[in-house]
Length: 462
Image (tube, rainbow, N blue to C red; front, top):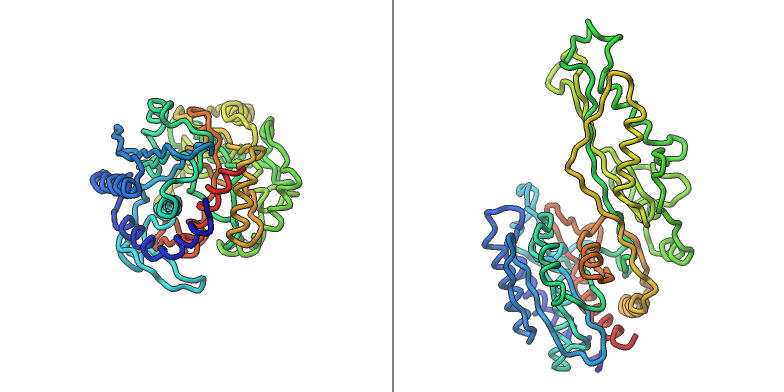
Protein backbone atom coordinates (compact mmCIF):
# COMPACT_ATOMS: atom_id res chain seq x y z
CA UNK A 1 0.00 0.00 0.00
CA UNK A 2 1.28 3.46 -0.90
CA UNK A 3 2.06 5.57 2.16
CA UNK A 4 2.81 8.68 0.11
CA UNK A 5 -0.73 8.77 -1.26
CA UNK A 6 -2.14 8.54 2.27
CA UNK A 7 0.08 11.36 3.52
CA UNK A 8 -0.95 13.51 0.57
CA UNK A 9 -4.62 12.84 1.33
CA UNK A 10 -4.06 13.88 4.98
CA UNK A 11 -2.54 17.17 3.83
CA UNK A 12 -5.36 17.88 1.38
CA UNK A 13 -8.07 17.07 3.92
CA UNK A 14 -6.57 19.00 6.87
CA UNK A 15 -9.21 21.75 6.85
CA UNK A 16 -12.02 19.17 6.85
CA UNK A 17 -10.26 17.24 9.65
CA UNK A 18 -10.07 20.39 11.78
CA UNK A 19 -13.75 21.11 11.11
CA UNK A 20 -14.69 17.63 12.33
CA UNK A 21 -12.63 18.12 15.47
CA UNK A 22 -14.33 21.49 16.07
CA UNK A 23 -17.75 19.79 15.90
CA UNK A 24 -16.58 17.20 18.42
CA UNK A 25 -15.18 19.88 20.75
CA UNK A 26 -18.52 21.72 20.84
CA UNK A 27 -20.03 18.83 22.82
CA UNK A 28 -19.56 19.56 26.58
CA UNK A 29 -18.81 15.94 27.58
CA UNK A 30 -17.88 16.61 31.23
CA UNK A 31 -18.06 13.17 32.81
CA UNK A 32 -17.69 14.11 36.46
CA UNK A 33 -20.77 16.40 36.57
CA UNK A 34 -24.18 14.63 36.38
CA UNK A 35 -25.64 17.74 34.74
CA UNK A 36 -23.69 16.84 31.57
CA UNK A 37 -24.72 13.17 31.37
CA UNK A 38 -26.69 13.65 28.15
CA UNK A 39 -23.79 15.57 26.61
CA UNK A 40 -21.44 12.67 27.35
CA UNK A 41 -23.93 10.37 25.61
CA UNK A 42 -24.04 12.82 22.71
CA UNK A 43 -20.26 12.66 22.35
CA UNK A 44 -20.37 8.86 22.31
CA UNK A 45 -23.05 8.95 19.61
CA UNK A 46 -20.96 11.44 17.62
CA UNK A 47 -17.98 9.06 17.68
CA UNK A 48 -20.08 6.07 16.67
CA UNK A 49 -21.49 7.98 13.69
CA UNK A 50 -18.06 9.24 12.66
CA UNK A 51 -16.49 5.77 12.78
CA UNK A 52 -19.41 4.31 10.85
CA UNK A 53 -19.01 7.01 8.20
CA UNK A 54 -15.64 5.48 7.25
CA UNK A 55 -16.93 1.92 7.24
CA UNK A 56 -15.98 0.87 10.77
CA UNK A 57 -18.41 -1.38 12.63
CA UNK A 58 -18.90 0.76 15.74
CA UNK A 59 -21.46 0.92 18.50
CA UNK A 60 -22.10 2.53 21.87
CA UNK A 61 -21.97 0.15 24.82
CA UNK A 62 -23.82 1.09 27.98
CA UNK A 63 -22.21 0.78 31.42
CA UNK A 64 -23.45 1.67 34.92
CA UNK A 65 -21.77 5.02 34.29
CA UNK A 66 -20.98 6.63 30.95
CA UNK A 67 -20.87 4.54 27.77
CA UNK A 68 -17.92 3.00 25.99
CA UNK A 69 -17.52 3.17 22.21
CA UNK A 70 -16.18 0.04 20.52
CA UNK A 71 -15.43 -0.42 16.82
CA UNK A 72 -13.79 -3.15 14.77
CA UNK A 73 -12.00 -3.42 11.46
CA UNK A 74 -11.48 -7.05 10.54
CA UNK A 75 -9.36 -6.71 7.40
CA UNK A 76 -5.63 -6.26 7.49
CA UNK A 77 -4.05 -9.36 6.05
CA UNK A 78 -1.12 -10.69 8.02
CA UNK A 79 -0.52 -7.42 9.87
CA UNK A 80 -0.85 -7.05 13.62
CA UNK A 81 -4.13 -6.52 15.43
CA UNK A 82 -3.95 -3.28 17.43
CA UNK A 83 -6.34 -1.84 19.98
CA UNK A 84 -6.45 1.96 19.94
CA UNK A 85 -7.57 3.68 23.15
CA UNK A 86 -8.64 7.25 23.78
CA UNK A 87 -11.18 9.02 25.97
CA UNK A 88 -13.90 11.39 24.82
CA UNK A 89 -14.85 12.92 28.17
CA UNK A 90 -13.31 16.18 29.35
CA UNK A 91 -12.50 18.03 32.55
CA UNK A 92 -14.82 20.65 34.06
CA UNK A 93 -14.10 24.20 32.91
CA UNK A 94 -14.04 26.04 36.25
CA UNK A 95 -12.99 28.75 36.88
CA UNK A 96 -14.94 29.93 33.86
CA UNK A 97 -13.96 33.58 34.30
CA UNK A 98 -10.33 32.73 33.46
CA UNK A 99 -11.22 31.54 29.97
CA UNK A 100 -10.73 34.01 27.13
CA UNK A 101 -13.67 32.50 25.24
CA UNK A 102 -16.47 29.96 25.69
CA UNK A 103 -14.68 26.64 26.41
CA UNK A 104 -17.11 24.81 24.12
CA UNK A 105 -16.97 27.31 21.28
CA UNK A 106 -13.61 26.21 19.83
CA UNK A 107 -11.66 28.44 17.47
CA UNK A 108 -8.37 28.70 15.63
CA UNK A 109 -5.99 31.25 17.12
CA UNK A 110 -2.58 32.54 16.08
CA UNK A 111 0.18 32.34 18.71
CA UNK A 112 3.94 32.80 18.90
CA UNK A 113 4.33 29.07 18.20
CA UNK A 114 1.87 28.98 15.32
CA UNK A 115 -1.84 28.35 14.99
CA UNK A 116 -3.67 26.50 17.77
CA UNK A 117 -7.09 24.99 18.31
CA UNK A 118 -8.48 26.58 21.48
CA UNK A 119 -11.18 24.80 23.51
CA UNK A 120 -11.80 22.28 26.28
CA UNK A 121 -10.72 18.81 25.21
CA UNK A 122 -8.67 20.03 22.25
CA UNK A 123 -5.54 18.38 23.68
CA UNK A 124 -6.94 16.09 26.38
CA UNK A 125 -8.05 13.94 24.68
CA UNK A 126 -10.38 14.68 21.76
CA UNK A 127 -7.71 16.21 19.53
CA UNK A 128 -5.30 13.37 20.24
CA UNK A 129 -7.97 10.73 19.75
CA UNK A 130 -8.95 12.22 16.40
CA UNK A 131 -5.38 12.13 15.06
CA UNK A 132 -5.72 8.36 14.89
CA UNK A 133 -9.26 8.41 13.48
CA UNK A 134 -8.23 10.88 10.77
CA UNK A 135 -5.23 8.72 9.85
CA UNK A 136 -7.59 5.78 9.42
CA UNK A 137 -9.98 7.94 7.38
CA UNK A 138 -7.16 8.79 4.96
CA UNK A 139 -6.09 5.13 4.64
CA UNK A 140 -9.67 4.11 3.84
CA UNK A 141 -10.11 6.94 1.33
CA UNK A 142 -6.96 6.02 -0.59
CA UNK A 143 -6.94 2.23 -0.35
CA UNK A 144 -10.50 1.29 0.62
CA UNK A 145 -9.13 -0.64 3.57
CA UNK A 146 -6.83 -0.25 6.57
CA UNK A 147 -3.28 -1.64 6.79
CA UNK A 148 -4.01 -3.90 9.76
CA UNK A 149 -6.80 -5.12 12.00
CA UNK A 150 -7.90 -2.44 14.47
CA UNK A 151 -10.17 -2.35 17.49
CA UNK A 152 -11.24 1.16 18.52
CA UNK A 153 -11.95 1.57 22.23
CA UNK A 154 -13.06 4.96 23.51
CA UNK A 155 -13.89 5.63 27.16
CA UNK A 156 -16.24 8.24 28.62
CA UNK A 157 -15.10 8.20 32.26
CA UNK A 158 -11.34 8.76 32.22
CA UNK A 159 -11.63 12.21 33.80
CA UNK A 160 -13.88 10.88 36.57
CA UNK A 161 -11.87 7.90 37.81
CA UNK A 162 -12.91 5.23 35.25
CA UNK A 163 -15.28 3.37 37.61
CA UNK A 164 -16.73 1.25 34.77
CA UNK A 165 -13.46 0.50 33.00
CA UNK A 166 -12.20 -2.66 34.72
CA UNK A 167 -15.64 -4.35 34.85
CA UNK A 168 -16.08 -3.57 31.15
CA UNK A 169 -12.64 -4.96 30.27
CA UNK A 170 -13.33 -8.12 32.26
CA UNK A 171 -16.78 -8.62 30.72
CA UNK A 172 -15.47 -8.08 27.17
CA UNK A 173 -12.05 -9.64 27.49
CA UNK A 174 -12.39 -11.90 24.46
CA UNK A 175 -13.71 -9.18 22.16
CA UNK A 176 -10.96 -6.73 23.12
CA UNK A 177 -8.05 -9.11 22.52
CA UNK A 178 -5.31 -7.73 20.28
CA UNK A 179 -1.55 -7.92 19.78
CA UNK A 180 -0.75 -4.45 21.09
CA UNK A 181 -2.57 -1.46 22.60
CA UNK A 182 -1.93 2.03 21.21
CA UNK A 183 -2.63 4.95 23.57
CA UNK A 184 -2.67 8.61 22.49
CA UNK A 185 -3.07 10.48 25.78
CA UNK A 186 0.49 11.72 26.32
CA UNK A 187 2.76 14.57 25.27
CA UNK A 188 6.08 15.23 23.57
CA UNK A 189 9.08 15.72 25.82
CA UNK A 190 9.90 19.02 24.09
CA UNK A 191 8.23 20.99 21.31
CA UNK A 192 8.79 19.18 18.02
CA UNK A 193 10.50 16.15 19.61
CA UNK A 194 8.45 13.00 18.88
CA UNK A 195 8.20 10.79 21.94
CA UNK A 196 7.16 7.28 22.92
CA UNK A 197 6.58 6.84 26.64
CA UNK A 198 8.53 3.82 27.84
CA UNK A 199 7.57 3.93 31.52
CA UNK A 200 4.87 5.38 33.75
CA UNK A 201 5.23 5.88 37.46
CA UNK A 202 2.81 4.09 39.75
CA UNK A 203 1.00 5.62 42.69
CA UNK A 204 0.52 4.94 46.39
CA UNK A 205 -1.74 7.07 48.60
CA UNK A 206 -2.00 7.02 52.37
CA UNK A 207 -3.22 9.23 55.19
CA UNK A 208 -2.68 9.15 58.93
CA UNK A 209 -3.63 10.97 62.11
CA UNK A 210 -1.40 11.44 65.14
CA UNK A 211 -3.46 11.51 68.33
CA UNK A 212 -2.15 12.91 71.62
CA UNK A 213 -4.34 14.21 74.46
CA UNK A 214 -8.01 13.28 74.53
CA UNK A 215 -9.04 16.95 74.02
CA UNK A 216 -7.44 20.22 72.88
CA UNK A 217 -5.47 21.62 75.81
CA UNK A 218 -4.69 25.12 77.12
CA UNK A 219 -1.08 25.74 76.04
CA UNK A 220 -0.40 27.66 79.23
CA UNK A 221 -1.46 24.75 81.41
CA UNK A 222 0.10 21.93 79.39
CA UNK A 223 2.71 23.67 77.26
CA UNK A 224 5.96 21.93 78.19
CA UNK A 225 4.86 18.66 79.76
CA UNK A 226 2.18 17.96 77.15
CA UNK A 227 2.88 16.05 73.93
CA UNK A 228 1.89 18.21 70.96
CA UNK A 229 0.65 16.09 67.98
CA UNK A 230 1.63 18.81 65.49
CA UNK A 231 5.19 18.80 66.77
CA UNK A 232 5.16 15.00 66.76
CA UNK A 233 3.93 14.96 63.18
CA UNK A 234 6.53 17.52 62.08
CA UNK A 235 9.33 15.40 63.53
CA UNK A 236 8.08 12.23 61.83
CA UNK A 237 7.59 13.93 58.45
CA UNK A 238 11.11 15.36 58.64
CA UNK A 239 12.41 11.83 59.27
CA UNK A 240 11.11 10.70 55.88
CA UNK A 241 14.03 12.45 54.15
CA UNK A 242 17.81 12.62 54.15
CA UNK A 243 18.47 16.35 53.83
CA UNK A 244 21.99 15.83 52.47
CA UNK A 245 21.15 13.48 49.60
CA UNK A 246 17.46 14.13 48.99
CA UNK A 247 16.77 10.41 49.27
CA UNK A 248 13.80 8.96 51.13
CA UNK A 249 14.95 7.47 54.43
CA UNK A 250 12.24 4.82 54.82
CA UNK A 251 13.83 1.35 55.08
CA UNK A 252 13.19 -0.67 51.92
CA UNK A 253 11.90 2.32 49.97
CA UNK A 254 14.17 1.69 46.95
CA UNK A 255 13.48 -2.04 46.62
CA UNK A 256 12.57 -2.73 42.98
CA UNK A 257 14.12 0.51 41.66
CA UNK A 258 16.45 0.12 38.65
CA UNK A 259 18.95 2.43 37.02
CA UNK A 260 18.13 3.77 33.55
CA UNK A 261 19.92 1.97 30.68
CA UNK A 262 22.69 3.99 29.03
CA UNK A 263 20.95 4.21 25.63
CA UNK A 264 17.80 5.66 27.19
CA UNK A 265 19.87 8.16 29.16
CA UNK A 266 21.52 9.22 25.92
CA UNK A 267 18.12 9.88 24.33
CA UNK A 268 16.95 11.84 27.36
CA UNK A 269 20.11 13.96 27.37
CA UNK A 270 19.56 14.90 23.71
CA UNK A 271 15.79 15.36 23.67
CA UNK A 272 15.78 19.16 23.84
CA UNK A 273 14.55 19.39 27.42
CA UNK A 274 15.40 22.77 28.99
CA UNK A 275 15.83 22.23 32.73
CA UNK A 276 16.13 25.93 33.55
CA UNK A 277 12.97 26.82 31.63
CA UNK A 278 11.10 23.91 33.21
CA UNK A 279 12.06 25.02 36.73
CA UNK A 280 11.84 28.77 36.22
CA UNK A 281 8.35 28.54 34.72
CA UNK A 282 6.96 27.63 38.15
CA UNK A 283 9.26 29.82 40.26
CA UNK A 284 12.14 27.45 41.07
CA UNK A 285 15.78 28.43 40.67
CA UNK A 286 17.24 24.93 41.06
CA UNK A 287 16.14 21.28 41.43
CA UNK A 288 15.45 20.09 44.97
CA UNK A 289 15.23 16.33 44.56
CA UNK A 290 17.53 13.36 44.81
CA UNK A 291 21.14 14.38 44.27
CA UNK A 292 23.11 12.68 41.50
CA UNK A 293 20.14 12.43 39.14
CA UNK A 294 19.06 14.88 36.45
CA UNK A 295 15.67 16.54 36.57
CA UNK A 296 14.33 14.17 33.90
CA UNK A 297 15.63 11.14 35.78
CA UNK A 298 14.01 12.40 38.97
CA UNK A 299 10.72 12.99 37.17
CA UNK A 300 10.59 9.78 35.15
CA UNK A 301 12.74 7.10 36.74
CA UNK A 302 13.09 7.80 40.48
CA UNK A 303 10.48 7.20 43.19
CA UNK A 304 9.18 9.96 45.44
CA UNK A 305 7.40 10.42 48.74
CA UNK A 306 5.48 13.69 48.80
CA UNK A 307 3.56 15.32 51.64
CA UNK A 308 0.32 16.61 50.10
CA UNK A 309 -1.37 17.98 53.19
CA UNK A 310 -0.61 18.78 56.85
CA UNK A 311 -3.17 20.21 59.23
CA UNK A 312 -4.34 20.38 62.82
CA UNK A 313 -5.03 22.80 65.61
CA UNK A 314 -6.52 26.24 65.10
CA UNK A 315 -6.58 27.69 61.59
CA UNK A 316 -8.95 30.63 61.97
CA UNK A 317 -8.24 34.34 62.22
CA UNK A 318 -6.03 35.47 65.06
CA UNK A 319 -4.61 32.95 67.51
CA UNK A 320 -5.93 30.31 69.84
CA UNK A 321 -3.52 29.07 72.47
CA UNK A 322 -4.13 25.34 72.30
CA UNK A 323 -2.21 22.12 72.11
CA UNK A 324 -4.36 20.24 69.56
CA UNK A 325 -5.47 16.71 70.28
CA UNK A 326 -4.86 15.58 66.67
CA UNK A 327 -2.64 16.29 63.67
CA UNK A 328 -3.18 14.96 60.15
CA UNK A 329 -1.04 14.11 57.14
CA UNK A 330 -1.71 13.05 53.55
CA UNK A 331 1.10 11.49 51.51
CA UNK A 332 1.53 10.10 48.02
CA UNK A 333 4.38 8.10 46.53
CA UNK A 334 5.27 7.82 42.85
CA UNK A 335 6.55 4.32 42.09
CA UNK A 336 8.97 3.12 39.41
CA UNK A 337 10.39 -0.18 38.18
CA UNK A 338 9.25 -3.21 40.17
CA UNK A 339 8.28 -1.39 43.37
CA UNK A 340 5.47 -3.19 45.23
CA UNK A 341 2.85 -0.70 46.52
CA UNK A 342 1.65 -3.05 49.27
CA UNK A 343 5.15 -3.71 50.60
CA UNK A 344 5.94 -0.01 50.41
CA UNK A 345 2.84 0.90 52.38
CA UNK A 346 3.89 -1.51 55.12
CA UNK A 347 7.39 -0.02 55.21
CA UNK A 348 6.10 3.54 55.48
CA UNK A 349 3.67 2.65 58.23
CA UNK A 350 6.37 0.84 60.16
CA UNK A 351 8.63 3.89 59.79
CA UNK A 352 5.97 6.10 61.37
CA UNK A 353 4.96 3.66 64.11
CA UNK A 354 8.56 2.97 65.15
CA UNK A 355 9.11 6.71 65.77
CA UNK A 356 6.05 7.47 67.86
CA UNK A 357 6.69 9.04 71.26
CA UNK A 358 5.03 7.69 74.42
CA UNK A 359 1.42 8.94 74.69
CA UNK A 360 1.15 9.33 70.90
CA UNK A 361 -0.75 6.92 68.70
CA UNK A 362 -1.39 6.77 64.98
CA UNK A 363 -4.61 5.98 63.15
CA UNK A 364 -4.30 5.06 59.47
CA UNK A 365 -6.84 5.72 56.75
CA UNK A 366 -8.33 2.46 55.45
CA UNK A 367 -9.22 3.71 51.97
CA UNK A 368 -6.21 1.99 50.43
CA UNK A 369 -5.12 2.96 46.94
CA UNK A 370 -1.99 1.87 45.10
CA UNK A 371 -0.84 0.75 41.68
CA UNK A 372 2.58 -0.36 40.42
CA UNK A 373 4.57 1.38 37.72
CA UNK A 374 4.13 0.40 34.08
CA UNK A 375 7.32 -0.38 32.16
CA UNK A 376 6.95 -0.95 28.44
CA UNK A 377 8.54 -3.91 26.71
CA UNK A 378 10.95 -2.07 24.42
CA UNK A 379 12.31 -5.39 23.15
CA UNK A 380 9.18 -5.75 21.05
CA UNK A 381 10.03 -4.82 17.42
CA UNK A 382 6.91 -2.62 17.16
CA UNK A 383 8.54 0.01 19.37
CA UNK A 384 11.59 0.51 17.19
CA UNK A 385 9.39 0.44 14.08
CA UNK A 386 7.23 3.21 15.53
CA UNK A 387 10.27 5.20 16.61
CA UNK A 388 11.61 5.08 13.05
CA UNK A 389 8.26 6.19 11.65
CA UNK A 390 8.08 9.13 14.05
CA UNK A 391 11.66 10.14 13.28
CA UNK A 392 10.85 10.21 9.57
CA UNK A 393 7.78 12.40 10.08
CA UNK A 394 9.26 14.93 12.50
CA UNK A 395 12.69 15.01 10.83
CA UNK A 396 14.58 14.36 14.06
CA UNK A 397 15.29 11.36 16.26
CA UNK A 398 12.25 10.17 18.19
CA UNK A 399 12.99 9.30 21.81
CA UNK A 400 11.77 6.78 24.34
CA UNK A 401 10.79 8.90 27.34
CA UNK A 402 9.42 8.36 30.80
CA UNK A 403 6.39 9.95 32.39
CA UNK A 404 6.15 11.38 35.86
CA UNK A 405 2.45 10.67 36.16
CA UNK A 406 0.28 7.59 35.87
CA UNK A 407 -2.17 6.33 33.23
CA UNK A 408 -4.13 3.56 34.99
CA UNK A 409 -5.64 2.13 31.79
CA UNK A 410 -2.17 0.96 30.70
CA UNK A 411 -1.88 -1.18 33.81
CA UNK A 412 -5.41 -2.52 33.35
CA UNK A 413 -4.73 -3.44 29.73
CA UNK A 414 -1.82 -5.51 31.00
CA UNK A 415 -3.45 -7.16 34.01
CA UNK A 416 -6.91 -7.75 32.53
CA UNK A 417 -6.26 -8.17 28.80
CA UNK A 418 -2.61 -9.25 28.87
CA UNK A 419 -1.73 -6.43 26.46
CA UNK A 420 1.47 -4.42 26.20
CA UNK A 421 0.85 -0.76 25.40
CA UNK A 422 2.62 1.79 23.23
CA UNK A 423 2.03 5.41 24.27
CA UNK A 424 2.45 8.05 21.56
CA UNK A 425 1.12 11.58 21.97
CA UNK A 426 1.62 14.94 20.30
CA UNK A 427 0.59 17.37 23.06
CA UNK A 428 2.91 20.11 24.33
CA UNK A 429 3.56 21.08 27.93
CA UNK A 430 1.90 24.47 27.39
CA UNK A 431 -1.41 22.98 26.21
CA UNK A 432 -3.04 23.88 29.57
CA UNK A 433 -4.85 20.57 29.90
CA UNK A 434 -7.28 20.57 32.86
CA UNK A 435 -6.85 24.37 32.97
CA UNK A 436 -8.51 27.43 31.43
CA UNK A 437 -7.72 28.18 27.78
CA UNK A 438 -6.71 24.63 26.82
CA UNK A 439 -5.31 24.39 23.31
CA UNK A 440 -3.80 21.96 20.82
CA UNK A 441 -1.27 23.08 18.22
CA UNK A 442 -2.48 22.68 14.64
CA UNK A 443 1.01 21.34 13.90
CA UNK A 444 0.53 18.66 16.56
CA UNK A 445 -2.85 17.73 15.09
CA UNK A 446 -1.61 17.66 11.48
CA UNK A 447 1.67 15.87 12.09
CA UNK A 448 -0.04 13.61 14.62
CA UNK A 449 -2.35 12.34 11.87
CA UNK A 450 0.59 11.85 9.53
CA UNK A 451 2.55 10.12 12.32
CA UNK A 452 -0.17 7.54 12.94
CA UNK A 453 -0.38 6.84 9.22
CA UNK A 454 3.36 6.18 9.19
CA UNK A 455 3.22 4.06 12.36
CA UNK A 456 0.42 1.87 11.02
CA UNK A 457 2.37 1.30 7.82
CA UNK A 458 5.56 0.55 9.76
CA UNK A 459 3.79 -1.97 12.02
CA UNK A 460 2.66 -3.97 8.99
CA UNK A 461 6.25 -4.44 7.76
CA UNK A 462 8.12 -4.70 11.08
